[in-house]
Image (cartoon, rainbow over all chains, first blue to last red):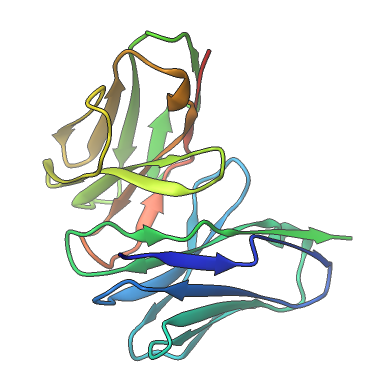
Length: 112
Length: 113
């Protein structure tokens, strides 16, 4: 069964600190993996996309990694800001005409 | 220049009523979706349309009926609303099926009382 598991469920960090969010998936055949950020009361917005051949991709202070062998991905946030407080959702795409598989998200709270 | 827009943003209604949520995208995408996000914040796909044709219909009560008059619009009609239908409903679109980025609307918070 195609599944995406994320950890931790929630995380509280101090402003300026770094953090890493984890995503494990069992989706097959794998097409790509995206990390989405969902602010409270808003729809998810894509941060990064990783395909099978990519190991690392950065988007500003966000760096995503992918290990296609172990089917794991991480999202590292550097020098966190209050505006980083949101849910971060790992989404894996399989072949055409199959639904995106969503993780349950990690709720990040950055406090001053 | 909103990409995916949903209306209304909030909807409070009584059990047994029938309601509709509208969605429009101006991105020229071929594929549109409806997702439900429950109280645990888990996003679940309900329907997917590609060029006005239904391609994904997950296990959803038949009280939910999507309608796509053209590929830029995907509306969701819900009959005989139940308390358990309370959730946030997100419309999304993507260039095509499978693997392309989904752009989400701001969500419609439905509360059934």
